[in-house]
Image 1 (spheres, rainbow, N blue to C red):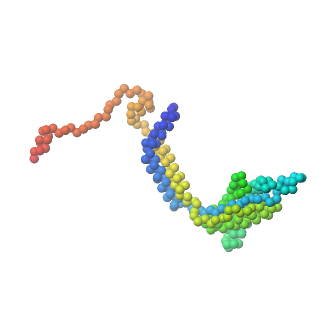
Image 2: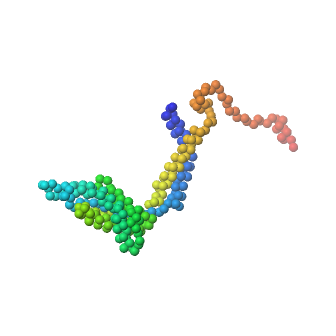
Image 3: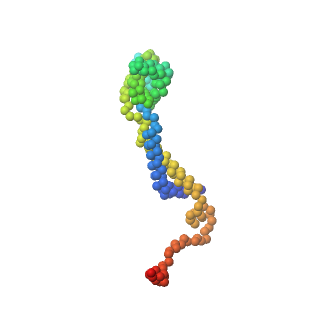
Length: 252
């Protein structure tokens, strides 16, 4: 089996049927746009970035001759402890405390599960920084939760682990003004790719399932049967009218 020949045949076939592929791709793009515009749930996100800092890590790093530690050691200690704090922020107790603070401020009735389901936490690789992203269907709610986390997270870290590691807000929350769930360019691109892929599969399968023989070369290639001869395709033309017919046509 000649793989290169088959690949070349498929590529040639796809180039030959490029109009079908482009048509399917455009249909996929329009379908993605229509679905996004009419069936996508609008969500809004607000994020906060924190820097974890170790103010006193002598208990972990000092020896009998050293009473102070370098800034690098403090940073390493903060990074070492960061995973522990991130797990604390995922607990029901912490999220319930955030919800209670929100309810006091805005006279609402949010539950801890509401806050927990809206919050996602990511650690920025090779740093002592982490990002909290709040995503809900209400721009104001996302912003309010993010603002509350700006206060709640440093407070929790300050009272934990004897205050060895604290958090400082480096990038404050911003109220979202547009829904990121729409993202028309990305979703239309996905629709374009899916449409083009479906068209390519259709073209290839249609060619594979087509058992018709169109030329002597294809007959030899498919069945290895020698062709002794072929009947040419004749083009039948209308015969020129005779003189008698022309004369009769002139008589009225």
